Image (tube, rainbow over all chains, first blue to last red):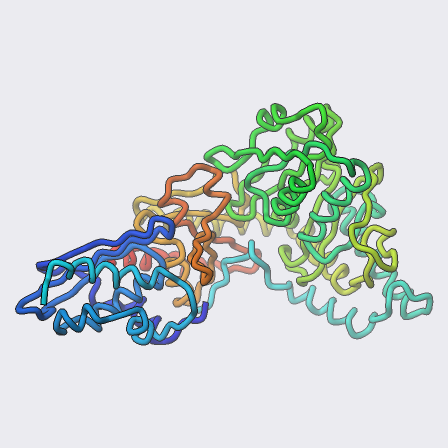
Length: 118
Length: 375
């Protein structure tokens, strides 16, 4: 599969695959894919102060998780809640159709943010 | 460094084979069915190739039919045999771990009224002769059992199954695409055998089918009546010659090359001792294959990471663009745990790999397994 340089960088050198002190977390599993992703968020005054992920899965779920973390870090929760698959794909520079797995980290972050009303 | 470790998918044509094929393309280009001298020259090369291949399999040259590859050989063998002998139906025995070139034919035949038993493999990846014997019915007319599995490299008990087939008078076909060129083959153990050139360092688009001369097989495509009426289509002389040259080279160097391959495989297996929680999928495998899974690492992620370091291996389980996930039917049939199925990669070493390449691969493998596990 031909991946962009940006995709390769996200997949091979993820900066957010680490342990952090977090206030919110949620996991999404796609058992049919063998994919599992957990997002960790440290939120203060509706702002994402830190974000991290842990994932087992295909290259796209790892790259999508890292892309999402980069987009979410330092942002207001309202902005994070507004993120969609297109934002992730732009950040990943991955535009092949299909590949539901890309949505998993997005679902996880939204699940983690459900209890925060803004 | 770029390292190719996917020889089960296809092989690099031996340089000597490529030279020989080029020579035939440019010098002996005549149509082997033409009566003039150009045609006659091509015909001689073609028939010599048939003889070489027959000798390799220890069968008669008139029992070798050239085809376009494994898929066509499997289709002619199964469909052609049934068409000629049992057009009204009957029972067929095959396995759950066959290549789609056999499995899809079996499924099609089921729709056409044939009964098919798909033998389940053990957890180690082989079907047992006992299960084969138990599956035989009064109306069993054909068995198709692969010689070596393409994903795991597990050698199937063809010798024992051959004995049982002969005892019960069942015609036995074997898809030997992953066996030819890797292990010694006695063609007489089976009644029909399929092979594909590009799996043994010959060009793509050529293959052969061995059919026991006592067997009646009908064509499944129609045309000019080439290959004694079984497989019409202009003779692929360069392809046939390429296969013969490649097999001759393998035969002449087999002891040395297979020992070297064994050594490379051992080096890979020894390197795994630095890692934990891995599983080798399949036992009693050919020297070229290692199918293994690392707990906590998805096979596609590992194969992609290796690729980004210049190393090509393959994975059987992957997401696809069609909103579907394909998981290995072979590993599922073996009842392996989910992590073994999701995590499996297939490393297939070839006669052209060097120790330096394997050293580089083992270092990258260890590095990437550790990295991906931390994510």
